[in-house]
Image 1 (cartoon, rainbow, N blue to C red):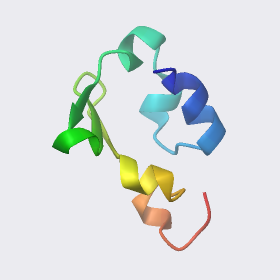
Image 2: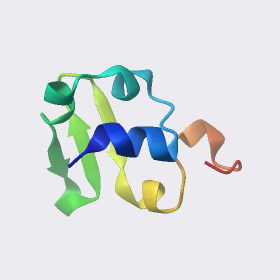
Image 3: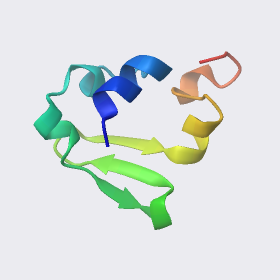
Length: 65
């Protein structure tokens, strides 16, 4: 999973993901039968259905990604 490029392309607002080294991004686990991605070392979680809808920040639900 090449999350560094994904983070840049869809505009993640999580600074921890944008600035993380590849080794840290590669250390993730899927949760909820694959609907969540969790990085324990970065204390970050992403909800895959929101990503598919273009929602990258729950504080921007009514704004495009």
